[in-house]
Image 1: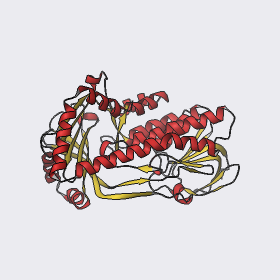
Image 2: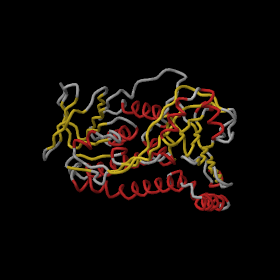
Image 3: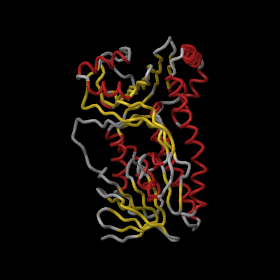
Image 4: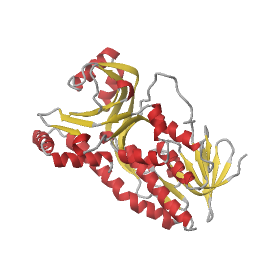
Length: 393
């Protein structure tokens, strides 16, 4: 039975939690990373993760700074150099090329399991981090000096600060009594990996359809990861379609931009919602990533937003540590909240607004939307600004 003390305990070893652990342990803080599974496990060859992230250059630079991006490249990532967006209504389209903005790429699409494995491999090399796998947090109690964390394997961990990186259904948020607000979109996103007939051209494709966007993200090995948002009933019907019928429906929805498709592996679906917590921290406890904000996957910004949380939280903790201050003081945790809340709320608002704009079926709105895309597409200056924003720079 462990009864070890740490400066920081992080529950949730996904991309955001593991990045936070790396950033802190590299600076010499003692960290416990706790995960319900074992993200360090390998997977069968010739399989692909249904969960992928379109990582911005800002996120990639974070991974380069902690020395694990080369591992991601070896395991498999796909550079994104262009973005093509078009509307089902009218002729509105947007064609952005990173080369026009003087950049080599906008970012990369990486399967989540690859990014997480590379992070955990990095963690194995850091002497200040202990990883606890296949174990869950049962509960925790807080006092003036720290947090006692009870784990499902009977271990007890003591930490100065508890970080909840345990997703949108965060147990830490619930046990802490922190409220969350938001709404469901009555939509589901269908995710799958497909092999296109034509080359994906290192391009992220997105078509706005009446029920929601269809994103075709370039993936390693010439494949495509799709995120097809529709009303719940439509998505569930598409999940049940025979494979050939599904591929035909997909190529029709994509207007044959990449020709026909061949399904690789299974299909999955998840409900879409907007969710946020107005309170980021309590006594010796703080939330990051999806534990405090879940947004529409329209522009694939969820992971990048969480990584910004990780970097900001690590920065304020390291600064407090170097100055000999209490890393879990409300002054420190509020500084993190102040730095992140405005950006998180802005991104949530933008994604919600885009969802409503491109989901509107009034003809006047459709016309304005299509015309607006045409105007933006004719302006190199505006497109270059969009490219920089997409890169997170």
